[in-house]
Image 1 (tube, rainbow, N blue to C red):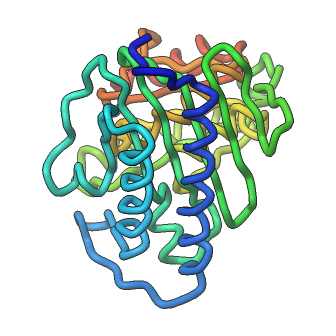
Image 2 (cartoon, rainbow, N blue to C red):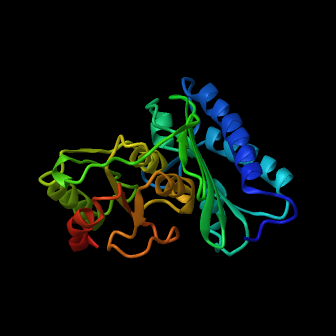
Length: 272
């Protein structure tokens, strides 16, 4: 598998949970106070809290696993997304849902995934405001606060709750495609949610509070490295919106419980 020395996945998970909780405390401490906000794009925000969380997470992971690679959202926003190799690589979103954080909307989380041979093998998604800790190790199931979770058993898209996101681009082509697709989906599903966090949407499908999710243009691998593993370990499916194999570097994702893949792909294919 490529892990060095005596490191095992249980140890990796324990370290990831510990550091996620420490970063979560930083988020919790900063949630209700005034934020120093910078713009990475027209509507893409970053705060001092994002940077402080990433620094804390990277420092602890480098100390615990000096041979492992690291990919983080804030570092990548400054220097570009590094190439994902087969080496053990921690892929980190220190604060997924920064716009929610700035507006005091409590759908924010820390997302930490360990990827080996380009496959996610450990995942932690922690929302410190809702006190929800989602965890998974490849082949060992998915858990919310220590209790096993499963994707929903809904078989009919018309009864399904769908999540998506509108992304950060505001050019006319992207906005028109996004809103036209949402308009079409509203005739086919029970209802639709835009929570502002890709990772929270993925674990939402994993624990059955959502049935489907798609995003055409998510930010980067840090949004999905942990959540996709948690969802798959809960019995859900993750795939390219075309129905093909999912690539975490592609910025395109669709996900569902074990029954609704084809129904969702049929809705998305004309918009790709």
